Length: 355
Image 1: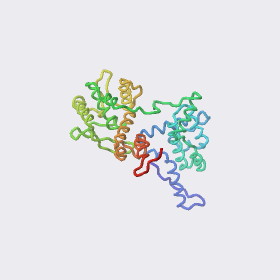
Image 2: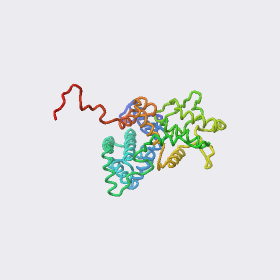
Image 3: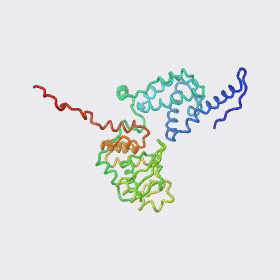
Image 4: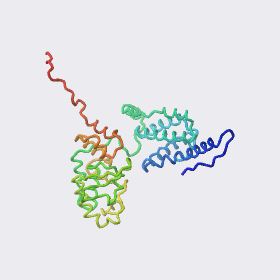
């Protein structure tokens, strides 16, 4: 925690001005620390990864910036040209345009913090703000087309360019799992993903006490919006939860750290089902249906798309999906709208056109 250092009365300054300058120095020194206090762990990891990449790029330029993540002085000498070069370097390295845009946004955020710390000149920061991310869909297509011509990869990492949209038969098949401990756990997992659109991190952090079979509800903490929600379980999810809990979890309920248990190679339940394990399990279950790279996000994407097609009101979709703004649920609704809905070529009481 930052404390205001004891003011030293400087020549030409009265006590009030000296105290004010001391307070500025203390606030500047803790600018990064104060900012990170309110960030979720996943956001912190993403920021650190982006800043480590930025440090790698600066290292190729012969610079050794230090700890960009938590040391404001490490930003001394960072210019808009370096930030612009970093963005272009990411594209040349094969990062998707979306990933490059997110990384650029992170760099801009920390550059603003470095201004508060008095390290980056405000005029330089204004120039950094002019480094433009390619956000338009057509711009992204052109960049990828050009990179393919030059045989430059267009994506790095496991994230797919387009999410898989599951059909109703595929959804039904994913929720139909063997009547074994592991199979009952998998059925409950897939129901949470496909019937409730929960994020993988939200599922991994569920506790046995979050499930109320008598009321047919599940309490879910959504860290992205810092909110605890109650979901009424769908009939299939409730049935899967009952079978999983009664046959597999009750004997271990007092020792299980999370609601979703992990499993061994021979199918026995033990420990916790981690985020990585959920990804691997969903991918395996997808492969069994001929889906080569199914992810938990594909399940959430399919849930939101089907809800939109069923004319779920925007406010309900936003709340059920745990979004903090209308932007994402609105995207699903707009994507599924009929473009020429309401277009009438023959208005009432209008004379017929001649042949």
